[in-house]
Length: 258
Image 1 (tube, rainbow, N blue to C red):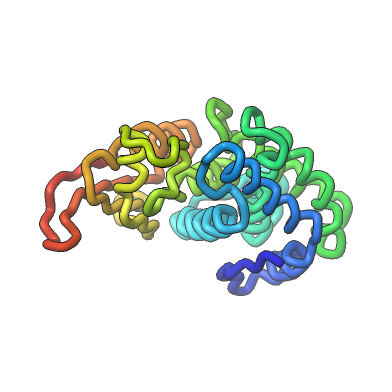
Image 2 (cartoon, rainbow, N blue to C red):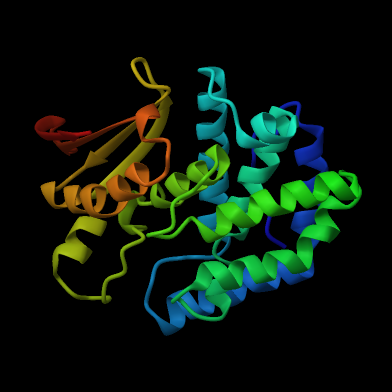
């Protein structure tokens, strides 16, 4: 059983839904199967339970920071729902977005949406009316299918999931795959990301600070994270700072930001 350590706070809807998610045997099996495809067969990084937990927590943190600074989620703007419902959308979008890796890497987001459809009724049914569940389902599926390039999110919630997915890059967990044992820009840059911190910003609602041990880590930021943010619809709300530091000496070497 996959457990999630999410800061639920006062969101009783999210709490009720996540209690069903963790007990769903189909979802737990799909996360395991996704990792067989990703890790065992393709040599990629984790796309299963660890990844989706990280992305869900990042997505929730980003969404709450945006809301705190006055950004209105689309389920609120378009349907008159609440911020708590937007939290449900981003968490479910985050934990379902890579289910399609159980089938194949190419176009996996569409298979993810297909698998999500098989469980959304089960996890939403006791929490939402049929009409509300239909809205939440459509928003979750939109977040899933637009998390990969070149798809452009049309909602705040989908943009949050897209960025949160790309931020799972700490200590070799980069989304850009590389051949195990190889020494190239992919492998060196993936191993250069020491820490990723998502903070409430000053000039912008969200500040992302990335600590690197090698300037090669800039490749991950520039080639993966930056395009995702710029294509998210939320680019005006983010400030990203990458710093290269000799961790054993605490010596600052280089800075990259956008």
